Image 1 (cartoon, rainbow, N blue to C red):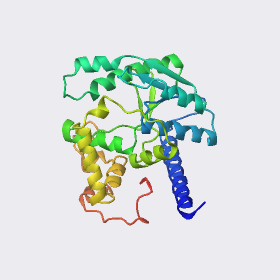
Image 2 (cartoon, rainbow, N blue to C red; image 1 turned 180 degrees about the vertical axis):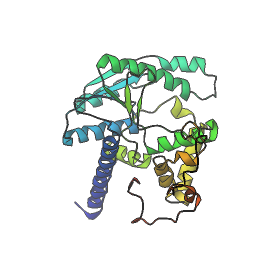
Image 3 (cartoon, rainbow, N blue to C red; image 1 turned 90 degrees about the horizontal axis):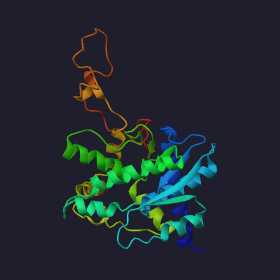
Image 4 (cartoon, helix red, strand yellow; image 1 turned 90 degrees about the vertical axis):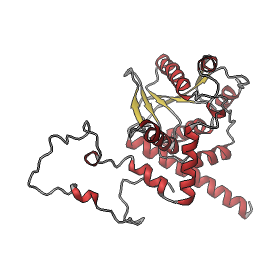
Length: 295
């Protein structure tokens, strides 16, 4: 093997190790997968869900606990959808799977006017079907392929257009209280997933719904984050880490902090008004221990 090929192999190995480390870190920190779990991996045919399945299969080989994996694809009956691609891939990998055929495509196209965003309705329809399938398959966890950039994008969408401080949680309970949804790729950058998909040569299936809507606000946010990464290195990482370092007493939500009941205690408070002071920029060595390392 010549030098360029050796270097490429080395970089690909580093990438796989990074994905395994970050995914394992998220799973452990949020107790996403437990012994005896049956994890339903939602497989769309995109780079993110393929990578999620691949990484979970690798982690299962090394995990100190036993858990099952079943892949589920929702065939939304989009025109031209290659129905044989996912079953063929999953049989090759030896992964148990279920294909659920539901024509949500026609519903979305009929209900949503041309040019309007389809994501909300499409997401609700998919969610309802997948929750039902999870119950039928006896799945204890539903794993989605959302990554760090999805979480940040949702945060800014809610901030800019919804007026709320809310993102995608790494783990949540469904509205009906029957399902636990997990996002094991919460710490993984989208660029790493794109590169990983190339290395693994996943048979990617393009989406003809949300993937074809170029003017979505989510795409605007994505472009903003890409520009930040170019012009202000570290800003995206710091913003993401801030989602896990929240100080309710220094925001304005009276449901999270009892401002009305606040009284002078006569005792020093290390988290009091000094929090308004500008903190010095920490070096890499002096950064807080709970900051996620993406390199």
